[in-house]
Image 1 (spheres, rainbow, N blue to C red):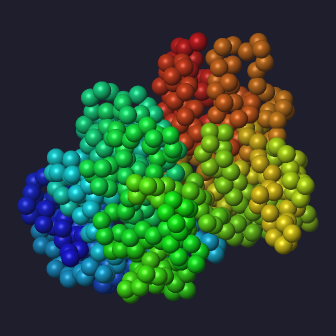
Image 2: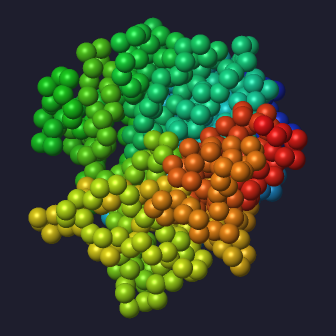
Image 3: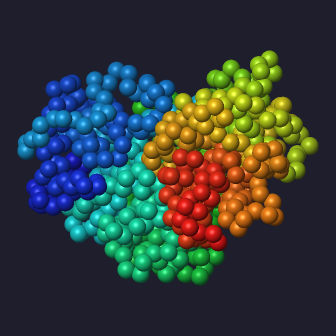
Length: 639
């Protein structure tokens, strides 16, 4: 079995002038991409990179990142995928002791000759971070064998040809890029890079896909849900959109000019199942029957050579049709969690069926349908998916507990107004510290309380500037920063004297909070982690749930009453529908419990109602109703 870069090299020899990568005005042929990677690989060898040497890549999605990936493979090293906007605390341990860190253009002289380093299929190819239930992130090591198997299965299922054009949309630290890049580059096709702002805006992404002639695309949920819900031109080159990374809630329309298929995988097991398996009996937006559409879309059947067992906690098979935990085996299993044998042993177990192999315990609950396809039924633990990103609440809790004002806290996923999951932090503060250092702005619970639930504070957090939110944002990637903050006097306990998560009060949505009065800015780590889109100052990676009852007239610019002009009234109406509570002209969308995907929905609805085009990136610079109203009026709409 070859290594992934040797498959690419074979294509570079067969079609050296074929287009390999397009990124804006940059276009690289297979020969040019190979030569750049050869030059950098030789430089890496001179700087001490050898077999399985970890080489951190702190680069945005770009030609430089692709060159670096190939170069590390050619040198025999293992690329560590990092997001350049991640906080230093998260990556410091990885960077320590590495002979080389690639964080910019390499500057190496291109070379027609590769370094000629032999690479075994079981050598590490790359490593990615995942959220850790012990409070620390885990580094998952993946081998060349896993990538090469994925190339073979996906090239067959997708029917990839050199004429295909794939989109590259995943954030730079995501293992999703494996399926976006290598099946295409090892088949002679071309990969097209969407810039960060385009990748974060469904209307702009749709237009880019159409204009770029994209034929195959993988899109993370829930961005995909917004994307295939848009109107599409009748004629487009796009033929297949695969979706995953989170639960798929609704079936796409069969009238779309392309097929939509669900896939399932993880960093530890890579590709596991697909609704394209087998292609002749696929279950997609086009082929799904009436019975299929009465339930949520399944996650499909296992890829060839991948084992998927549905087992009890005692590792016994469940009866067919019953829900159990999914255990995965096969050539795409990761080696494990690097440097952590105990954690690896907890999740990678000896195959209970015998034979000497391993299985990965996914933690996902599934049910096998009569047709052999699997349905997803949640988790056995507290892990949640936030905007397609895995989050272990324990890791977030560990960071918040490091703050001197926090005595206790619980983090959990709660449904937002649109049904998408938001991260909520329930915080008990050290009463010895000033209350105005709590959150800077707070959320309040709504709805009935359990008799055992503890009271939550209804006091506003004062003018501390969102200190706890900023504290978390300086240490965690964007999706792991709570967007809902509920101060509690104490946490509810069950009869075993443990925190009763079911008794935690549900937050209400919307809010009265505006950007900080001194600068209008919040501390963040610089990136919208849904899409890799850069944020400008003043944009917030997380915020607060609204005070119970919404605006309550506290602002001098409180929500307009019956006498409001039609544009103001209409914008505030859509704002309330998206956040679930009334808003005021100066309210900050992210701080009021929204996130970038909810902002995308709002901007799209505003555009449809008023016939205007508001760019998401412009709205997020100052995400208030006032901004929307000003933009609508600037384009002359008064509806």
